[in-house]
Structures are given as structure tokens and as C-alpha cells.
Length: 116
Length: 218
Image (cartoon, rainbow over all chains, first blue to last red):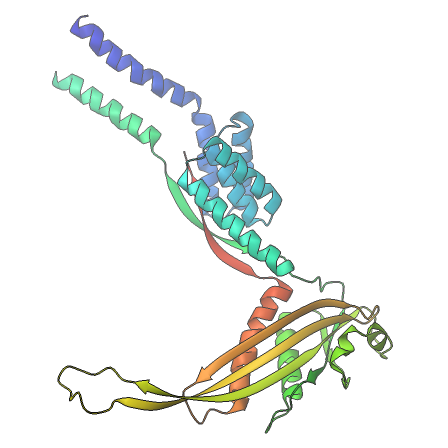
């Protein structure tokens, strides 16, 4: 293999990654728009964006997690639980999702205890 | 060659930015449902409390009724009123007929009542003080200390006037120690009842707790 061939391989492989990344950029945009909305406390908009993101990419752990946070914020606890579980199923090692789910469960346990 | 390195560097940077796992902390108010739905009651009637042990110097029943009338009035949108209902037995709260047969004018109202016990205790102890190195080892450093302990036990009941049934019940027990030997039972009572009020309202009316969550981008 010549130097030229090696260089072209080195160049093409990352470029393919970038191109595949561009394909999913629409989803990423929805995810980012949702994050921007959530940061501005516009949770309905955030929910809309993350739900849209999940329609085209149901395997986005981030979208499931973020949607769970938004549902929790809105007091839709059953929906939030489903989304946290979906996020953890896709990405079981993600420490942020784990932390969110643990805190969510603790908060719910307290509420249930008080109800009793 | 320098040009190639530069291109490679840019590609690595782009890739590393693509794979980064960014997160933001957001603070959310996690709403908790109230233990009892008070919306269906138009009026909230504060009645007498069964006093298990009378207190000296002040009427604990009246103080408690006034305190909760003010606090509930500031918190609830329901109409708040008070009614004198002398309670002679401790188990009267379970007597549905007693509560049903009260001549309460307002329908769809709830009675706020319960039982109360307020006790005071003085505890004395010898407390040893830690000695400093230069101090004589033969002098005694034990000190006689005294603390006043006040305990307030409150059993709260919400009773539906139409059915006479208890719609909400919860027990509270608060104790506080005071170093001040001149601490009066009257002032200590308000310290304790405030703690109980915070817990009661949080549970009975539902509260919003602020918690942190992560939103992530990858």
C-alpha cells in the first residue's frame, strides 16, 4: 500500500462517521432544541421536541431520559417512570440516567409512605 | 506532511466533539399529592381539641385553635371558621354519630380536631469538661448542667360533617431541649407547634420539593 492509499483510508473512515452523524443530526437538533427549551423553563416545548426526537429515533436514551425529567416536572409520574425505564434499558451504564431514576424512585417512595 | 497532520487533528477534534456526553443539571419542583382532597369541602371548621393533660399558665386548647385558624386561613382558599365542641372522651373521634349529629350549618364541610398532650421535663447531669494540657490534673472540671425538655404530642383528625367519618388522621410528636432555665412552657409550645404545623401542612396539603435532575445530550 502506498502512502497515498493509507492517507485516503485515514481520511475516508472518519468522513464516513461524520456523514452518518449528519444523518442523525436532525434528531440531535430536536434533542438540543428540547434542552434549550428546558433550560429556559419551557417544559411543554421541551416535551414536544423530545417526543418528536423519539418518533424518529426510539433508541435515544437521552431523549427518553430528558422526557422522563420533563414528565416528572409536570407531575406525570407514571409516564416519567416508563421513560426512565426505557432510557435505562437502552443505556444501563449511564450514571446520569441512573442517578435520575434513583432520585425519582426515592421521591415516589416518600410520597407513597406518606399516603399510607 | 504538516498539512496532513493538520487535517488529522481537525478530524480527531470533530470526532471527539461528536462522542462527548454533555449534561446539564436542572432543578425541578417535584409535586407531591396531598394526603387528602380538601377541594370538595367548602368550609374548614376548627373545633376543640381533647386535652390529655391540662397545662399551667395558659389554655393550650384555645392557643392551638387560634394558631391553626390563622395558619390555615393564610394557606387554604376554603372558608375557615371555628366552632366550640367540648370533647369529653378520647375515643370520641371514632364515634361517627357524634360528629354527624352536630348542628353544623354548612354542608360539605370538614372538622379539624384532635387530641393534645404537652409535657415538660427537667433533666440534670454532671458534664465533664475536657482539660487543657497546662491545667492542673487535680482540679475537678465537672459541671452541673440542666436542660428543660418540652414535648408536644398532637393527634390531628379531619372529620367529614356529612358522614361523621375520619377523612384524615396523623400523629405528631415533637421534643425540644432548652439550655435557658427561664424558658417558659408558653414560648416552647409555639416552637413545637410550628414544627408540627410545617410537617402537617406538607403532608396534608401536599408540597413541592426542589430536586436536581440531569438532562443529557448524548
